[in-house]
Length: 191
Ligand code: SIN
View (tube, rainbow, N blue to C red):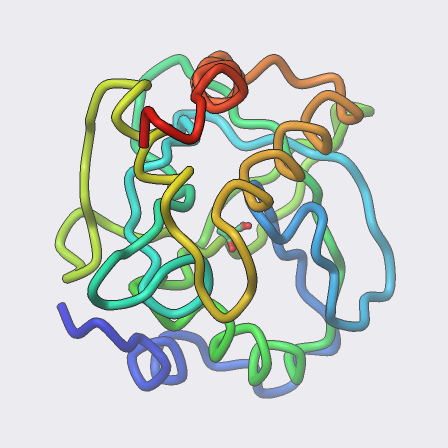
């Protein structure tokens, strides 16, 4: 799949006559809300886990030294917690550009914290995208994050802000927290 997903995403959904739609955020969309929304509610989706398995060439790294950002991987029985935003479809113009490095908009069933549900969309970087990096040991992911810097800033800032947001949401994401603690113990000489 092409590295730039803007055109693919534009063709994926027909928003004609749709006034608003729920968007589920599980990574930077939780803490960097640079888009207008009509409503915001903590929510979760079933059957997916958050993983730092996606390369970032355009935000938190460069093509020569990509950073690592999160995507979702299917896992039966898993629950991924995040933040849902009810947005106007016009917002996807901006978000498709922001998430263009491999992320596709997929349909998903959201469960809000009060147990009610709704259909929505989520950006997921699937394993067939060119920037997908896949699994690695926590310490190796942390070392790569410690080194990487891109136009949106240091990759470490992405991880630390996400970890803080997840704690505020009451989510215990053992993958994110394990990499956070590796990153905290990495000295400058270790990277
Ligand atoms: C998301 O936050 O929902 C997508 C991944 C990211 O932008 O970090």
